[in-house]
Every structure is written in structure tokens, then in C-alpha cells.
Picture 1: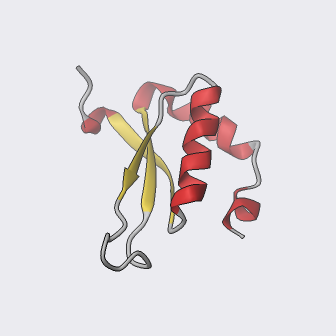
Picture 2: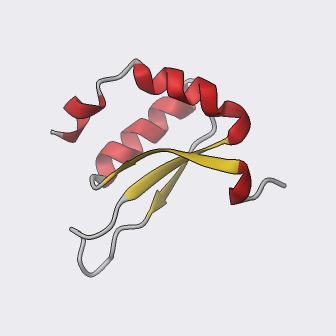
Picture 3: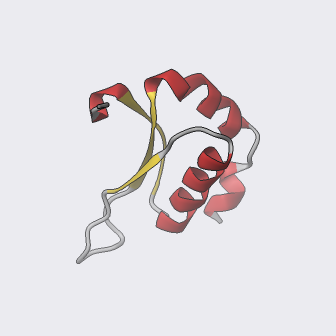
Length: 75
């Protein structure tokens, strides 16, 4: 069973909705992705959401992320 040490962070943002969209896009492209919500529940403006993929999917994930305009998602 894989552990988090077998996964690499490929994206992070302060916008949870944006992170969810990115994770969904990776999954649609057959890249397993996990969204880790590190936002503070009491102070939602603190912290970030992070996307992790298994190490063996890292290069594919980078290629998928290159195809989208991440800056436009943040707006």
C-alpha cells in the first residue's frame, strides 16, 4: 500500500475550489491525485490546499498542468 512518501506535491494554492478543480483535471487524465486541505478551519485565510500525485505519475501530471492556465483559475 502506498504511503505519502511515495507521493509528490505538484500544486498548491490558497483557493480550495481551485485546488479541487486541478485535482479533478488530473483524475480525468488518469493521474491519481489527492487534495490535502491545510487551511485553518477557524481562520480560512490561513494555510493552503495542496495536490499530490504518486511519484510514478509525476511527469504526466506536470504535462497536464502545463495545458491549463493556472493563473486564470486563481482569479
